[in-house]
Image (cartoon, rainbow, N blue to C red):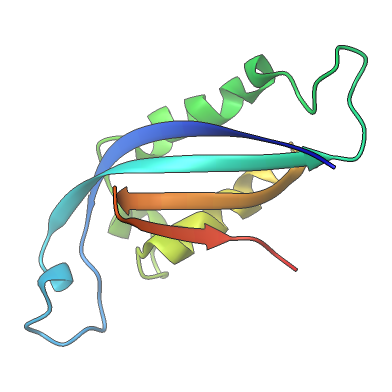
Length: 119
């Protein structure tokens, strides 16, 4: 199995709901997100790639146009704007165009990561 990944970055605000009132994540705050797209294939294409990284430009365009410098609560409503939910939303958005996609990873901070990978 061949596996590749590519990182994309964006900045956005959000506030989580359903947490205790004194939880810091209920307040409006922002992150510099890192999204990692993971792709795999049992065989390589005619150029020796799982997929040409250049062909992932639509993902960058989507992130730049739909997520960067936005308020995620507005975009993800009615879902809570957690990293876990964002990973699933991105997976569902990109899977139809990228059948090699098998997981999406979202990091809000250098020490935290949420991964969506269907079984």
